[in-house]
Length: 114
Image (cartoon, rainbow, N blue to C red; front, side, top):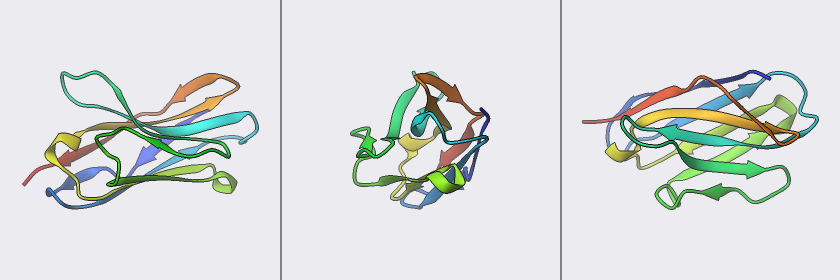
């Protein structure tokens, strides 16, 4: 399984970005997809996840600002990020869980700065 994230960049506070992640291969056995982030000097944290057929879950810090969505037919997961704050600056990694095993892709850097 290979995951490729894209869509990061530099944005001013209050701005928006949309991250995309493409998963290779079949969706058979895939239980969940989502996004983690890791800021310099900080631990990795779950930003948003979506279980197949389930309700998305979000970190408290992004609720109301970020929206996760998926397209199973295209093996894609997206993260719409609105009202971005400097503390959202991090490398964002997408993940997918197949048969109970997590797979990770290279991250995409999001920098929120004026």
